[in-house]
Length: 350
Image (cartoon, rainbow, N blue to C red; front, side, top):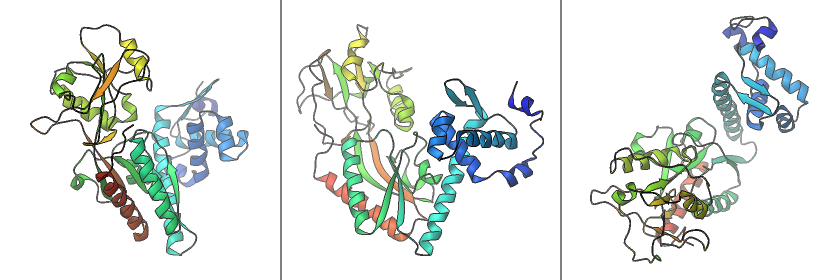
């Protein structure tokens, strides 16, 4: 029996779209998002500071108003239906826009401190992120701005900002700046390159010959998972596919244990390796040895091709152009300070 059977209704009744729009309230959306993110009604109730029966009742009422089931209810928690996935994305956008609008209203009335929501992607050079976030916090304190961090699943380029989930976002610039939406301003930190870890290579040295894209494309290359950095994953897979038809990354059995991943690859007809995400400022990378356990492995740079094609990513900070000028200036100063520090310093090197 579906929820609609249980209520004795059809998707078109008793709520028309117009009637549903008049009755859906922000609390319905907040409760639904809380359940979707927590995975259980108990966890969502604790997060939303509401009694569980009340929360459950309001989510069911939302399903009734929408006219379809939004959640799969299971013993071990809840999952989203196809309709629920759509509404989750839209609900987050609505709630974020409302929050952004209230914040701008308060700013216009000079009420309270400025608030700045900054999106931090799951994969970003740790040393760059530490430097950038510490600089942001320090400069924000000087101008009386509160910074909060927004962690979201990876999405398309800086969409956390364009969809109002955040005011600013760190990320990778895979398009020309002129191709970005007019609602975004972008400052870059520079080019970053990955490491390629190869089992059985000799002890590395700064002068060691780099690996070409042709050589890399001929290996079994572990990289991923794609959902952590889809833009980088797809860009690099496409570049390597031009060197070897049918090239595809292999999913690593261990996402953060490189020695174990190389060991588990075993014998094969081709060399196996691990390709990391962009980690080192271009030209600042020094080869390293991988641990003392498992197969001996060393890292190497990936050579720039004669035609200019290589595997690099442009690190950037983007923000909404409708932010107050003081916040835009703050973000500009952060990006400028960090990018200038990168020029003369080696980051991301252990």
